[in-house]
Image (cartoon, rainbow, N blue to C red; front, side):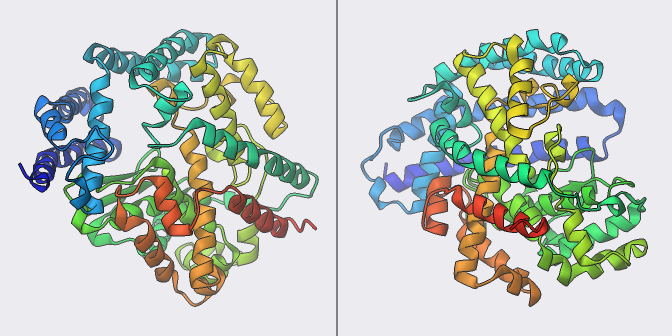
Length: 506
Ligand code: MG
């Protein structure tokens, strides 16, 4: 068979997985938004059925044979040089997914699903009762299982690499460590300097605001950012998320807290960033394995870019404060300057998801170090709370008094998501680097905003990042877009510059 014919067959084969994944997303979206409570039992069965259909198709002998014909396991299969970047990436990514999936015996996959499903319930109870001892045994089971998985997947340097690969393909723990080590000292020092200064007044952010008014504001913001309502919609869920239900159906959710307006404003902008990425993937890739974000880090770079680099920028509110005053008349007296300062308040706190733009990355460095220890066996689960508190003290200067404010706060370990956390920080770092590249090519972002040219910024992101989907791995994509690999200096400069200004540091 001609090499190109094999690739065409792989594409055809994959189309069904693509459609099934979107059906799965529809069920998930419904479950988080409108599904009546009693529907949960059968919904879980429906979801499990789809999951198993998708898994079977991803690991079938038929797909294995096609990939073998394509010589997918070798670095330079004969005939591959005639392929476009897109077709070569289809073979690469399909093989990557297939070879990872077949390395785990079915017994282990089933057991992992059972343990993590039980663990999530145990974690919820442990968090409410503030009892780490309740969660520790099941967390130990999960750590043992992910270590077993890491050795089955295989790795060159550190077992963590094999787990990270699930969320940030092709990344290495040693690179992440090097980047985090570079970021730590300057950020810790900045947080300490800010701590010595009088805090900004953000009390008006807690004024009671009507949910309908907040919704009007969220819709106006989405419109401003270029979110396409013909290909998506905004709904409400307990935790905001973005989900792709079809090539032309990328939905987001937000939440409206009556006594904390920023939650909906920045939740909406954050999810819009994720959605703009998915909406910007080239239509040529629809129906293929490449029609997806390339990594969670790059995905998060798009949400953080819009949320922080644009949405928490002085010039954005100087230009757009009327969006707030017309949606929420009670806030029409608040100036752009006081709003800007209030939404950029920096203060060490215990809870990651509530952390500001500066301290956030320290929460991730903490988790990354603890995960590395658990995965390589140098940190026992029983010693986790002490290690957590010591590291929090070193990084943030505070010590939580409750497990629920510390080691029990996140859901990730209970679903087995060890290796996930670093992607949040990578997103923040990539976002600064992209902002720098945009200014080099298009000029000052403040001027673009002042001239109401956010669309130019979106076009840059589409052209350099979104349209490619998974054609280029994250590092190559970053080099093509900015001329170099991820460099934490852009983040450090951006943060020091911005917060030196917010807090008048000299
Ligand atoms: Mg996100």
